[in-house]
Length: 347
Ligand code: GDD
Ligand code: MG
Image (cartoon, rainbow, N blue to C red):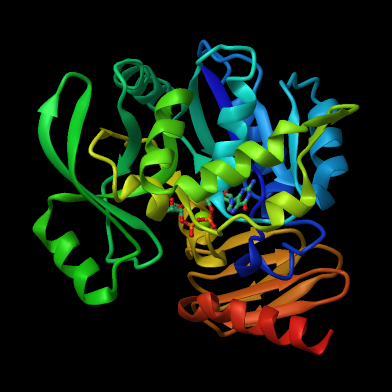
């Protein structure tokens, strides 16, 4: 099984730590290792081969260096001249992986997720691999605990060996629909990790989104290796439709299957999810770095350079870096994207 590590996201909701030049997957947010390094380390003990990485060209040295310092082997770092979302990124990786006439099972992982229970994750991988070998496009389903609208929802159908058939896959429903799904108890969240034979993904992409496949084939035809990096044709790839695997393939395919995953998974999408998953003190606070708190409860404090002091507040997030300080109510951290957009507009 060959891991494909998607490392092309922007992680803008974790500003001011996560920046365009240093997005969340390259930060050490949940351990001593960066999220990218953790993603690979977590696979130790499985039968995985050296992974293929795919990231934006601008981050190539970050990826190469983070792998080098931990002696992490790879089977190429594919560079996207521009981001065209996950359907094309995975297509490039699948085309690259099948170039020698092979057809490996791909384990597509996001480079910026947290999974606490590695053993449970490995068990789910084993189950998914059996389904993938039988031609299924497998997703890993998480039991939802709230009607989150930033996730894909999977309705599990009949049980099959090692998992379930997928009755329905709905990417990012609206709040009303998400509430109904969660109340029904029949839906899981899509974790955004997938497993399938490279050829099966390419076949389904051809069926439902032939243009993406055609552009990716042409862009990688002249694949030019440059040290560890594999470049694709920038002009051709610029013309690729922008779409996620969820909309482009998973919502449409008849071959979707799901393996449940109960392993302390989080996509660390915001500061509040980082607070939720971290160890808390007796007042429910998470403190990273130097801070003095008085009468503070259920808060997340992250000091990089300076001492932070907070007095008499509950449910706050305070993140300090060398050039920016962000203070937010814990329920409003999704709005950080507005701040990032304003910053971009001012540049
Ligand atoms: N290489 C590359 N190129 N990677 C990308 C690109 C791209 O153009 N776009 C996104 N990624 C990476 C991100 O870094 C992230 O690790 C992963 O692919 C998923 O992209 P997101 O942009 O974070 O997707 P999402 O959160 O909106 O939704 C997906 O993940 C959810 C779970 O976290 C979907 O799969 C949802 O269905 C799912 O619930
Ligand atoms: Mg995400």
